[in-house]
Amino acid sequence: MGGQQAGRMSQVKAKAPQLDDVSKQIIAELQEDGRRSYAAIGKAVGLSEAAVRQRVQRLVDTGVVQVVAVTDPVEVGFARQAMIGIKASGELEPIADALADIAEIAYVVITAGSYDFLAEVVCESDDHLLDIVSRQIRTIPGVVSTETHVYLKLRKQTYAWGVR
Image 1 (tube, rainbow, N blue to C red):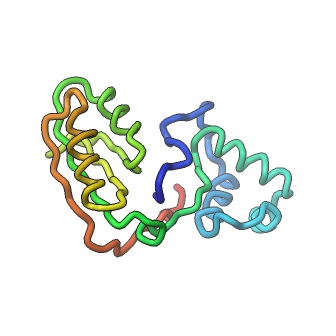
Image 2 (image 1 turned 135 degrees about the vertical axis):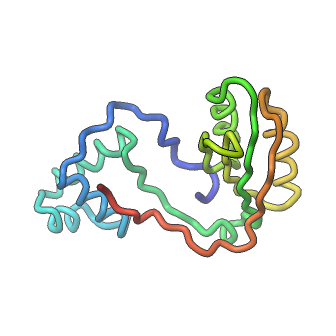
């Protein structure tokens, strides 16, 4: 999270490659430590530094991975986080795109269930959150209602779920 993301995973530049075991090992190495050098990764997976660099670049270019700094929002000035459940009517894709264009929204998913969307927001204050909900999200055509779930304390956030 931590403000504006480096890019949306949905904005894939090229077709995602089939992942072989070596690419999966590279991803696992990066999940453990995103600052690990290409030489160290190469040693772990049995490739040269140049070969690892090429594979990582291909994984980034195709949207399979992002290498970003994950921050603690509170420590960088964002005192309020919330998950917003959104109910909508009509076509969902344009609404999802409009939500994704809001800078403070770090995560948007189209869901099945009580809500059509879940959107995670990172804000500076309660007033900032109110502005996003009332002046930005609720004014999107097709948004019917919202329910805001304010985070009291972040207990776990991980990106090391591995690869299959």
